[in-house]
Length: 294
Image 1 (cartoon, one colour):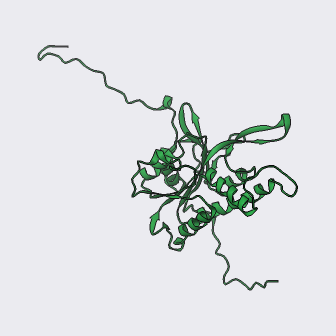
Image 2 (image 1 turned 60 degrees about the horizontal axis):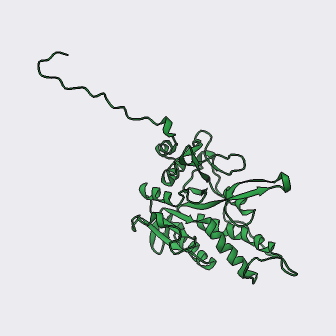
Image 3 (image 1 turned 135 degrees about the vertical axis):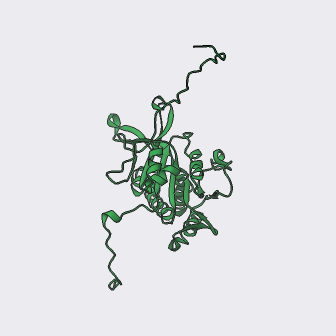
């Protein structure tokens, strides 16, 4: 049995008033084509340097909508295998003791994973590799396909820990799928983040400080910041600093608001078009001839 000696010092106590969010950790999930990837451009507009850990499939990795962004403000790191992911985690955390996040010598303010749904494919592939299978398939003597889904949540935990254990803000994007509870006629379905298995989509959102659900409201794209029924959403904040229920899809402003910027919080609030003020136009007056009384 291992012997453990006394620690060198007691952990320093922290008062509630000292609790601060140095780095925002955010999950944004929405239906495909809602604009999750396109909203990455708001990070550049707000002055952040961005590193994208790209895990979606295809030659362009689903990033065509931001291909016009400047190369000196945004960098993409494709990840296709679990071994590559582990190397990326380690590289991003290399300079954490200096209070910065770097990748191959370049410093970044925000890490965006696009997407967690794509990471799910990597977790699945790794699980099958470990178990010596090529596909989940069907059950047969000696093989229970459910064993794969028991392995995946741990990989999800390792991924989240690896990408949030860095000195930078972290944003995870995920597609929307339908989840369910109950059996038979009593079964209900509801939107949920798309990840393998049933356990991880419920577990992972609780590890992050903010979960936003992208939806269409009154014809506009908005981010829901409060739970609605079974739809998971919410942002951790002090009692006197609550976020509006609907905010505009601006990741840059969201990070600033979560780290204490009151002006960013004000700008985030979604205002329906019907309530937006239309600039008043002064009436046009006809010119009068000199010396003619009106």
